[in-house]
Every structure is written in C-alpha cells, then in structure tokens.
Image 1: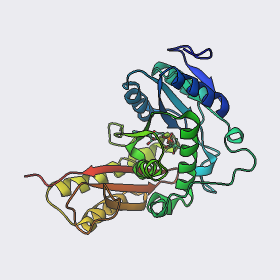
Image 2: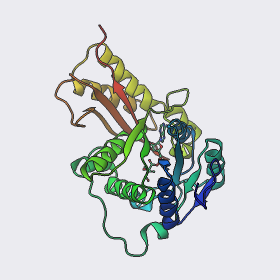
Image 3: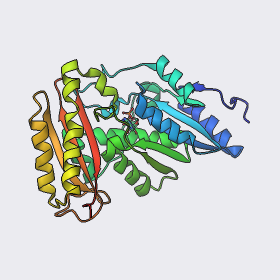
Length: 294
Ligand code: PAJ
C-alpha cells in the first residue's frame, strides 16, 4: 500500500492536494476508489449509500463531508444547517469508510473562484425554480470533488432525483470518467424520506410531513389503476398537500424518467416529484409511477 494509507483504517483529510495525492497513489497500486459525497449530518439515507458503495469489492471507500455554500441561496439555511462532524466520523467508521474528505470553504473555493458549471435548462426547473442557482452550486462542487478524488464510482440518492439526473448529465456532457450509481430512498415508517432537514421540523410539522409521501402514493395508486393523464395525477398530489394545514406546495410534477420532460400522456417509465414548504423546512420527495396493473 502507500506510505500514508493503512487499509481498514479511517483517514480524515481536509486539504484537496492531500486527497488528490493519496488517491493518485492508491490508483498507482491498482486500487479503485468509490466516493459518496455528502453535506454531513449523516442519517440512515447516507448510511444506505455507504453500505451500497461498500459492496463494490476491492475499492477504497471514500466519503466527503462539506456544507457547500455555493448551493445555498440568500436567506436559505446555510448558517443553521446541522454540523455534526464527530458523530459523522463515528458513522463513517462504523460503515467501513477509509477516507473522509472534509474541506473548508476557503480551501475549496479560495478567495477568487469565479468559474461555475452551468446546468442547462433543467437547472431552472422545479427545484431549480424554487432555489435559483442551487444546481449550478451542486454541479460545481460535484465536478470539483470528482476532479480531486478521481473516483471510479460515485453514489447519489434518488431522494434528490433532479440532482441525480443533472449529475448524470454533467458526467455525460463533460466526458467525466466515473460511473454514477443511484440509490433508492430510505424512509421513516410513515413514509417521510430521511433528510438532514427533518431535524428542523416541530413535532406538529413532523406529524404532517408524511403528506408528501401520501400525495406521491395516491398518484402512484391512480397510475396503477390506469390513469394516464399526468395533469390528474398532479392535481391529486396538490390536493393532498393542500389539505395539510402546515404545508404549502412548492411544486408537484410528473416527468418522463428518461427525458425529465412532462409527458402529454403516460406511456413509459415516469416519476412523480413533489416539494412542500413547512414553516421550518423545505422538503422534497419522489416516487416512480407504476404502469397500469393488468
Ligand atoms: P446531502 O443532502 O447530504 O445528501 C448526500 C446524498 O445522500 C445525496 O446523494 C442524497 O440524495 C442522499 N440522500 C439523502 N437522503 C436520502 C434518503 N432518505 N435516501 C437515500 N439517499 C438519500 O445532496 C447533497 O448532500 C449535496 O447536494 C451534495 C451532492 C453532497 C453536493 O454538495
């Protein structure tokens, strides 16, 4: 192995140069690298990504922990975003992570970083319309992480489905040499998708937050029953959230899974997406729509 690396041990590095040097040395001795990018405050969703990533044999499992300021808009939750580094490192150790890259904003962006990745039209839709500039920030940090770590595999959750689609396009359109792997959503017993932002919810909001999954499930049920009109499914979702006192709908949408365009009629793999604002948190969720039964 290399001088600075002991197999099976957790190495925590904060300098991009050190990380690049270490992973280059590991590649030099034939090791592949798998990366799981996160913003920390690790929960069961992140742990599922780490577990799936660890199943790829004979690779070094790396995770990044970085609350990326570039993907937060003015007035968003950058300052209060949960930061739980010690607990995160414990979880990484428990999941067999061998390298954690935890940079600071200054080392990542310096004083004068100016060039960013432009996500294209999909970056302005849905979540991008609610959070202008968000996806440019996401794609810029992901491109940087991929360039520093140079992983063979990189894992992302389907919970942030539009993010996953945009990252696949980033890799395709900029010819990046990495395999992107998507992981299904981990949920609470009432269906609420695990999220670091769930910690913001008051008990009353938490009780009502199941409405997102309920809305998606109703749309899926109608689709299974033969409803082919996306507008009907969108109206079904909007009604469910509208009936939840503390929730305000940001968007409900049905998109073609391959193109991410809203289909005129459902005739192939499609996905429902939903986002709602509670007084304390903006929450998103998604579900694949089943084809009609029979
Ligand atoms: P973060 O919100 O920390 O999420 C890190 C990864 O965990 C993402 O790929 C996300 O989709 C996945 N994830 C979160 N909750 C999940 C759940 N309940 N089930 C399955 N996967 C889940 O997403 C980001 O960070 C950032 O935008 C990042 C990609 C790290 C760039 O800064």
